[in-house]
Image (cartoon, rainbow, N blue to C red; front, side, top):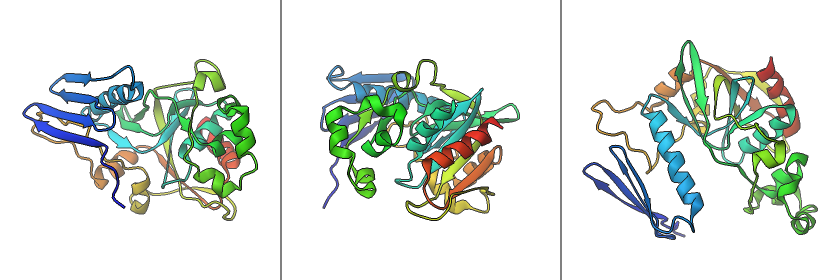
Length: 273
C-alpha cells in the first residue's frame, strides 16, 4: 500500500514552510527566522523536534556532518553507536550507561573537527524505548507499568523486539542526575553489523575507506528541516566527506551474535581505556 503523507512543504524566497498534516502545525524557517505556529501546547514533541532540528542545522552549517547514531561518553570522551535498521544502537547505549557512562544522544549525532581531533554533538531529546529494551535493562524498570510487564514478559524474543510499543525513558529518572552530556570529544564510532541468534560477538577496528559498505549505517540525509542558507558554497555531505571526517577517529565493526551486555562491557572498556 501507499505510505501515508505526513508533511507538506513549500519553498519560499528566503526559506521554507512545512505543514504537518495530522496536527496542522506549521514550521517556518530560513535566514535566521525560526517559527512554530499552531496548536503548540497540544503537540510538544513536534515543537521539541523543531527546536532540535534548528540546532542540527546550525551545527551542519558550521561544517559538521550528520550521523544516524546514538552516543555515550566518559570523562569527556565520546563513542557514537550506529547500526543498520533494527540493530539496537540506542538499546546498546542504555546498556553502556550501566557501566558508568553518560548519555549523549539517542538517534542523531553531529560530528565536526576541533583542534587535532573530532567532537560529537548530541540532540537534547530523551530516548523512546520498546518493551524488549525495558525488560532486559534493570535501570529502565520504572518506565513500564506492572500490567504491561505482565503482558510482555513471556513473549518470544523475536516478537518482543518487533513490537511498535514505545515508552519515554527519562535519563535522570532511570540513571540519576547529571548523566546527559550534549557533546564530547569523539574517540570512535562503533557500527553494529550483528545478527540475533548468531555466533560469538566480535569487535574489530576497520578502515572505513576500504569498508564503505558500512557507511550507510551512519550517513543520514538532512531532511526537510535543513536549510543551507544563502551561502554560495553548499556543504559537502558526500561519502568522501564522511570518510575524510571519520579518519579523525577509530571505527569499530561489531559482528557475530547480538549480545548487548557483552558488547556494552567491551565498548565501555574501550572508551575508558
